[in-house]
Image 1 (spheres, helix red, strand yellow):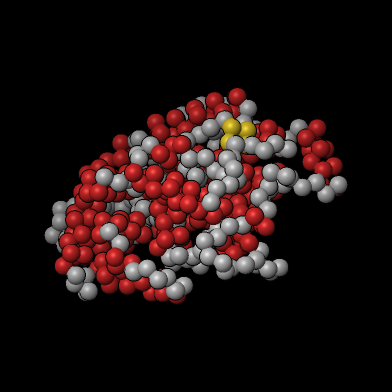
Image 2: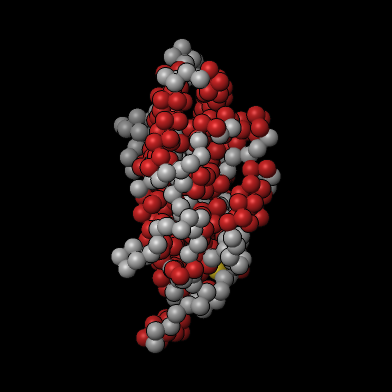
Length: 403
C-alpha cells in the first residue's frame, strides 16, 4: 500500500487565503495583552513580547539541557538516532506552530507550552514516572505526574515568573487522553490554578479531567500525540524491536510517521478553522484511538521494553529513594542530595531572589525533585556510586548490535 498525504480542501485553502489578504484575526486567539504573571515584572516590549519571554525563560532554565539525555521510549540503546525528549519537545513545537499559524493563534504561546511541557519528566520515560509516583504515594499518599511536576519546576522550584497561560498549557498538556474535540475553558486566576495543581497531587485521576484554558494549549495537547505516535514507531524499527510498521492498521491516518503528522495536521485544520475549539472528524478520531492502542500493544507493552524496567530499574528507584531520604535526615552536607541537588536549586533560586527556603520543603518532595531531575545516565551513575555492590545493572544494546 502506497504512502498517502492528504491535503486541505480547495474550498478551505481559498477561504484561508482570502482571510489572510483582508487581515483577519482569530478572535479565539490568546492575545499578548492578556498575559498574567505572579509577579509584576518581565513586562513585554517590542523585541521580547510576552510569551517570547516565557520561551527564553524555559530554554535558559536549569533543567532544559537535561532533555538531551531523558528517554522518550527506548532507554537502553546506544543509538544516536533514537529520539530523546529534546527532540520530542521540538517536534511538538513544530507541529503545533504549523497548526496554530494556519488557525491564526498565538505561536509564541504555543512554542512556550511545547518547549516546557516535559521539563519535569523523570528519567526512563513513562516507566520511570509510574515507578516514582508509586514510591511517592507509598511514602506520602500523594501522586507524581510529569505534567504537574513540569509546573513545579518552572513555577515553584526555580520561580521563573512564567505566565499563567503557559503554565496552564503545560499542566493540561497530557497527551495520554485523546479527545475528538478540545474546547478551552475560560481563563482562571492563580488561586484557581494552584487549587487544580494541588488536586492533581491528592487525587490519582484528577489529571484526566484537566482542560486547557486557551486554544493554543489545546493545539499543543493534540500535537503532543501527533509528535509521538509515528515517531515511536519509527524508533521501534531503528531499535530492532519491530522489523517494519506493517503490523499497524492501514487507516486514514497512515501508518508511518510522515503520514501521521501530515494527515492529522490536515484533518485538524480542516475541521477547526474559524472555530473556538479543535476538532477531528469521526473517522480520524476513531483511527487515532486505534493507532494509540496498537502502539501500546506492539511497542510500550512489549516484553522486551518492559522487562528491564521491572527487574532492574524499579528496584534501583526504590533503593535510591530510601537512600536519599536517609541522606536528608542525617543532614550531611557532603551527601549527594545536598551537594548535587539542594545547593544547585538554592543557587538558581537565589538568582531570582526567591525568599522561601528550599531546605524547608517536605523531605519526600525534595527526594522526588532530585530523582525527577536526573537524566538516564546520571541516574545510573548515582546508583552505581551509592550501591557499588548491587546486583542490579543495565546492559545497553551497543552501537553495532541491532535489537
